Amino acid sequence: MLRTSANPLATAATLPPAVPPARHGPRRRASRIAKTATLLPAVLLLSPACSTDSRSPGQDPSAPSDSPPAFLVDPTWPRELPDDWILGSITSVFVDDRDHVWITHLPETLTPEEIAAVQDPPIGECCVPAPVVIEIDPDGNVVQAWGDPATQDVSEFPRNSHGLFVDHNGFVWIGTYRHHRVMKFTRDGRHLMTLGRYDENGGSGDTELLGGPAGIWVDPETNEVFVADGYRNRRVVVFDGETGDYLRHWGAYGEPPDDEAAYDYAGRTEASPPPPQFSTVHGLVGSRDGLIYVADRRGNRIQAFRRDGAYVTEKTIAPLTRASGSAFVVALSPDDGQRWLYLADGTNHKVWILRRSDLEVVGEFGRGGRQAGQFIRPHGMDVDSQGNVYVGEASTGRRVQRFVPVAG
Image 1 (cartoon, rainbow, N blue to C red):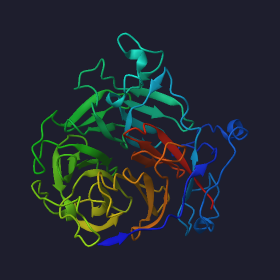
Image 2 (tube, one colour; image 1 turned 45 degrees about the horizontal axis):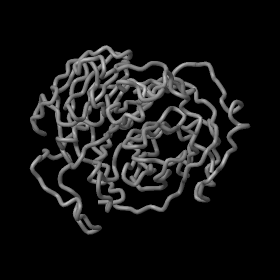
Image 3 (cartoon, helix red, strand yellow; image 1 turned 90 degrees about the vertical axis):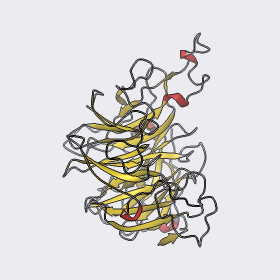
């Protein structure tokens, strides 16, 4: 087992970045630097360890570099939400092939003071809960939004949404962690299919029911849907993306999951053996070279598998982290070799940077706090085609921030 307590090599500061192009095909570029440079002076807080990276913002992210990436936070993104909307806890962040950022949040986490305008009678002028699912373009503008718990039946929208993925066919997959299902939608929110059944859980061995699905990844080659089924169950489970048929599942180390297994997470020490079972299978992502990286949240680790479930390796991060653990969600850099792996840590309030070839921690950014570039419970994360990292915060963080790669 590999363990580390890496020194930070990168921290985030603020700088107004250029707007990235879409991943596929030309699009109209819009520079935001001219609009913001006179208002937002750049502050660079990078460690000397990053000074060998000669890339500049907007440079081709596939260009080789031996240095780990460093980031600046863009405080101008996203723009103000329309219609007096306000966000609850952010549960998912995903970037599609247009470099549009999709988020889900939990309106039910908002307090009466935050949504004063919808109280009966209203107690203030602002605000209104935003729809559950929001699509935002690279400029930070809302493209569309859907999912309204006030008017829709639970069969039509992702209640308690958690985990979102827009697949290669443009279908939107969203998990519902409290209600044990994954729902498939069209891009504009029309419901097509449901995996699992509302409020039913048959345990980690069940081939029809889910148990707290938290993360989703769809293989563009096989159209297989990989689900981090981990708030109640302890497994990764795979379905056919067209028919919804069950295909296979596995637990930690590629072994059958055991829901009854016990482990003393609170009493864990540096000398403790790793948990033999998954704790909270919370996030997962597939790489171009055929691996699946799984974030085992309370297990404080990432495990790598082949797509058939064969175990490859694991990496423990901040092993003495208690409470919710250190391994919330994983994302990969967009360069050809996907050299870097990012891990959002919602307990230590940071993002870890790992070298994917050996899963060694080489840097980090963020810390606990409410200022730009800081986090309260980073919980959703993804990366666009230019290497920008988008991080959404749950609990009382309730925002999404963009971090731009820069030269050290």
